[in-house]
Image (cartoon, rainbow, N blue to C red; front, side, top):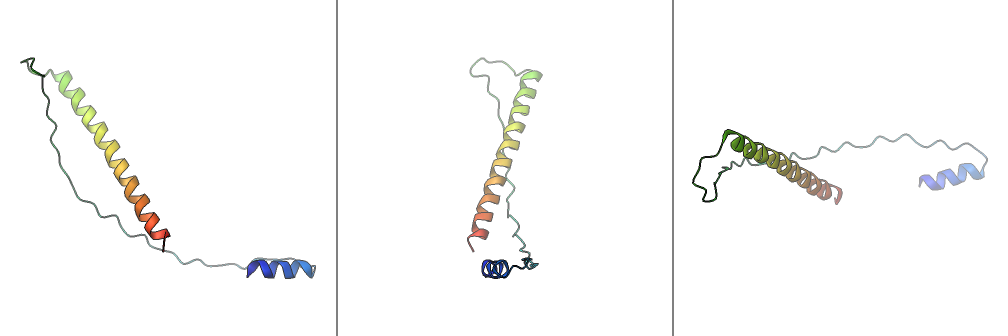
Length: 89
């Protein structure tokens, strides 16, 4: 429709000014989540010794980095799924 108006204006030698449109805002639905809790265990793999403080801190940092990565990955996937469903409408 707009292309036709543009062509007509140009053919008549007039300047084409596109119409200002107001787009309807769409509220995206909230992503439903569920809290999950996990336990991290350390094992000396048969060495029969206690883990040092450094070992425990390293394992905790690794678990926290994994959790951050996993949560971001899951959130990104949920957003992509939601957006794909919304855009399919």
